[in-house]
Length: 141
Length: 141
DNA sequence: TGTAATTCCTCTAGTAACTAGAGGTTCAAG
DNA sequence: CTTGAACCTCTAGTTACTAGAGGAATTACA
Image (cartoon, rainbow over all chains, first blue to last red; front, side, top):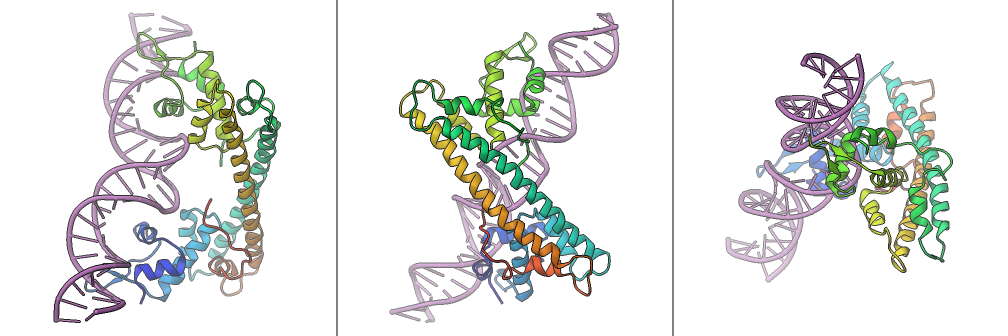
């Protein structure tokens, strides 16, 4: 049996975050000691590791919920898990592409004021000037 | 003179967001009509475009405030603008690198359950299994 | 066994950067 | 001059946590 602190140490998930997950229904309510403190078993540890891994991969909690609900599922439900992974992969690739655009533009901006700042810094100008950048950047993260 | 809706159309920034920026001090309080509606001038339009561009580049509002405060600055203050650009660039590169790690791992996960799902889908297993992934992914976005 | 340090409890509120809605007023067109 | 679109303020909700207050339980050591 682990205390909430033990669980935190083993999973690198902070104590308040564990309680937060419990509140959100991602973790089942654990047993309590006579003094009302949470005690967790192996299953809770695994589940929390699973959640943490998903989060590290960038899955929003809502998708983690989706995956958790598939536990022990069979047949067509399994496709769901696969779909989530695929969707996430597409999303990541999209994010990479957009960030690479930003990288190019930020490089341009940064170079604009490299060392010499004569009168008005070109960086400020570049930040404000949308026209100089090729390729629109979208509004999403 | 532009109404808030005009400004919104010209900048692609939503109306409530413009008011939000005003509340945060990013935009100065505009003139009002007799009926209490906001009226903006050219300067406000430019400032809002600047803010939007910064946001598109991924700068948090706090950094945008920093840049805005540099307007008309001179000498060493100008380095601040350059620093912000550099910092943002480093951040973007970092995000790209991490996302590329995720891409690799998601590919692995997705492939693990490609079409055939025998008994227990490997995707679910792979999501939970942190050990199979090389290179730790950090906890930050 | 006593006590002090540590960990735990709940609850509220704050973070970023908006977005949505309620309930009401003003403006512009026909 | 009336309608309908756009505007006003204000509150609350979103995501995924984090921080703090105030107090109780557990653990370590003498």
